[in-house]
Image (cartoon, rainbow, N blue to C red; front, side, top):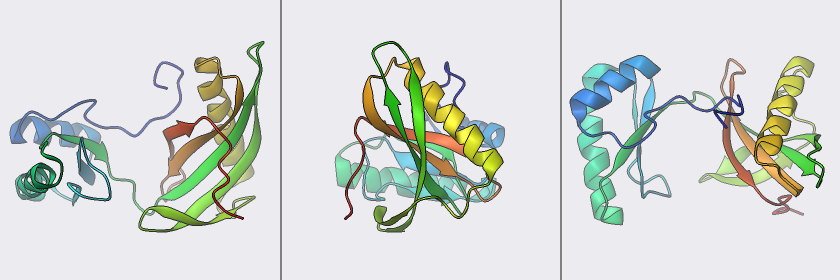
Length: 176
């Protein structure tokens, strides 16, 4: 996605080796950051760090929890997205390289990181943001020469900065 010029969440780009390296990268990314267990899931091994003074304590706690939960204490770091919105774009790609989007769904109402309600169109979106995110979703599909229908997921912060999160190679239909 980086090569395709699709915005991604700034972060460590791999595992953090130690506290000094983590602090250095956190300064480059800018606080707040979130430490995440590489083998994690369900919120285990995750710690939000608001300022440098709290980094080492959060690092130690995240690593211990990751080791206990997953037998793997690897940690990476990302910019913490404040007041996030979860916005998805449906895309369709054909065998000739043409990709289009079918607008967005707002999947921000969640419990335990699971979607409860999906709303279309998103009440959070502006016309300008919809255009930018739709273009990014299409770029994502074009970059991988995608054929079929799919879902490109983004996180959007309180300032309406958006970041690619993942792509599912299907139209998601979890809800009636």
